[in-house]
Amino acid sequence: MVVKTVLVVEDEHKIARMIQAYLARDGYRVEVAFDGVQGWDLFRRLEPDLVVLDLMLPQMSGLELAQKMRSASSVPIVMLTARAEEADRVAGLEMGADDYVTKPFSLRELSARVRAVLRRVDAEPVSEVVEIGPLAVDMAAREVRVDGRLIELTPTEFDLLAYLVQHPGRALSRRELMEAIQERSYASLTRTIDSHMKNLRYKIEADPKEPQYILTVHGVGYKFRREG
Image (cartoon, rainbow, N blue to C red; front, side, top):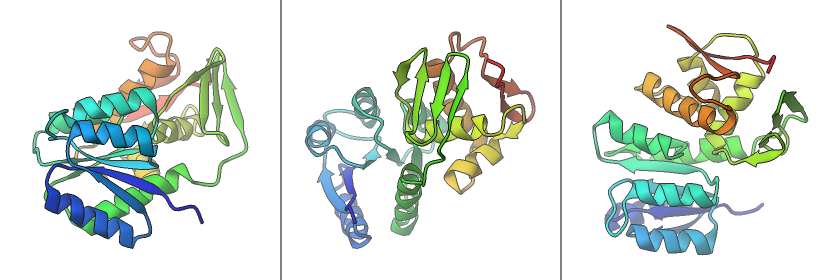
């Protein structure tokens, strides 16, 4: 069995060590960084399977670090934040984070989120390539191409797109979409799912403001148009 590596970037030493010990008990290899610069250095050297990232960091903010990570990799990111404002969580999601936990949190909850994200990434693939015009979604390889060009999606973005593609023409509520990929309900469904959809449209649509694939169903959620 391959041991997964988790990088924890958290400036509060006590919290970081508690997370490290708890996740190590679950069988992960866990490395810790206490500021954004150290986190970026460890990220490049370790190439972790998942990152637990605090938004409030010295040297380099969590949002800046998440952006740098996303420019280099599609590694899953679970954010930690003590901020109550919804805008901060949305900003993290729009940077490409896959999930978030708001402080104070239980270590059991964080472990469950980490396990759920990694389980989705490692899920048994569906052997199918769906092609709609210039868009190709390879379920087995978890790859998306537009006009043959590989598009970098986060694990959550890919899972959302795959779910949409597998239910063409059907109006899917935000709650259904989030429960399908996260196995839990968000307290702020609207802003969370809309952030992910905004990212997807930016990446796969020729004109994100006039989408051809991911359509808004007002008062409900979204649907996928398969005609291309």
